[in-house]
Image (tube, rainbow, N blue to C red; front, side, top):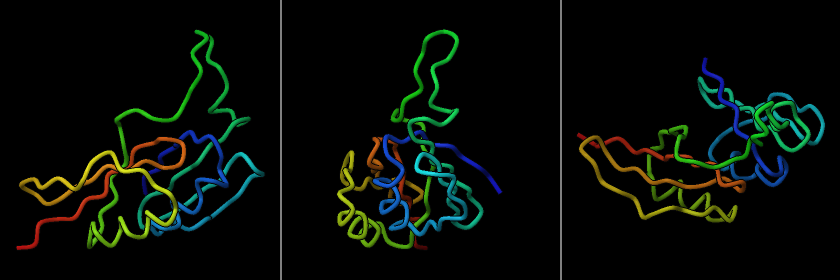
Length: 122
């Protein structure tokens, strides 16, 4: 099982987004931290006040966003997008067709990218 940590601005604001993708809460350590699970992926959401959000010795401040992402395989991109629209999710583009299937990038409430991937049907 893989574990990924995402920095978020607000754990409570992020939960509906991840629940719409099928994640379940496995542990909650106060307002700033929650552990989620979906299939073989553990996802840790770390908000302000967690050790992962503290400034580094260099002065850099960890923050959400960027282009690296987790990939969530879905049966239907259209259905997944409809479920996420109700959470206020922002999409970086329309679905894009490639040789292996379709993908679209969405963002959680803190701006972390999530790729939704629908495999090509043979």
